[in-house]
Image 1: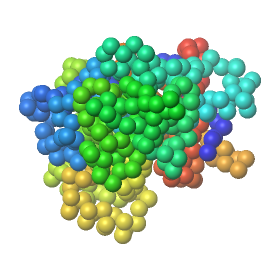
Image 2 (image 1 turned 90 degrees about the vertical axis):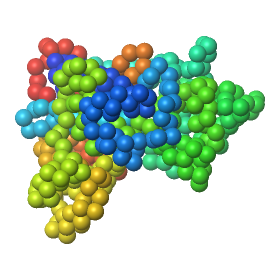
Image 3 (image 1 turned 135 degrees about the vertical axis):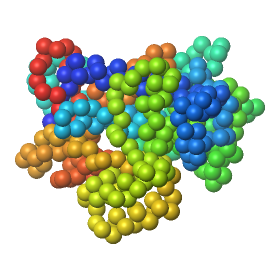
Image 4 (image 1 turned 180 degrees about the vertical axis):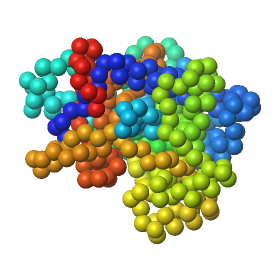
Length: 413
């Protein structure tokens, strides 16, 4: 659902966020290239090696695989939250198959249509350039010697919850939207079936998770993947965005290490801080979490979308007891964070205004340069009192207005 009230961010605030997001992606790409390569950060114990090596999202099958230009995460959707003091924090990095970019475009289109005079009265930075930049970054990944690469968007199909976005992005970029059955691998080269025969494919923007991408490589029962795709990828005959194995950097225990990762690779202090995170694998952290379950947010390290979590302040005694047992049984599988009082902005509900919590997901492209969408997707909790903004659990979204200059002196939201 679309909420008509825009979120407004001042130019100087956005400049700070943009710098922090670019810094974070530079460091995380270096981290991914390292942990699937020489592993210096682990050998030098700049972070505990067991946090990476014990992750269920660490994909040993692609260890040593070289990706185009050393860039593992080409498209990120980093979730930011703002506390009651106005400070922004990174909540999640989303380096695998982040969704929501199409809603940034759709929300802006709707806003211009229903409130054109209001929109025209403010110096709002455009978001429409994202599509062009996405295609430019994808084409840049093409194997060497390919001057006019064929790019496709690989979707699991019409039953996927994000299929509308897959269709929208492919259409706007002018590339083919394909399913696994539309592609075939021959002699480690990927081809697309067309009415005129097989056509070579050079870059795949995949919206399928690692384990379903190739039945030879991952889940044998996969009906949405392409048999032999990973071998073609290994051979360097096709580029895949995002690279396989990025999930290790999305592991919420590894997330807690990102400030150290930034300092290790960039020799810089993080511009954007993390939310304070307790690792249940650590005995002292685990003891604290178990003693304060009623005031913590407990998350499974490999879940996303607002699932697999306990919000202590909104939980029952039985729910807390269940999580207590689960944490004790498998401590590595959980982290915990204090409840962040997300920033509040009015929500239009049945013709009346009421407060609603919100977060922000800017989309960051990494390739020949780093491109950060001006604003991104503001998600809002439409259920009264809820902290969950995910659309799959009753959340909505709104347009995000980043001011083009500092002449606008309204409050950030």
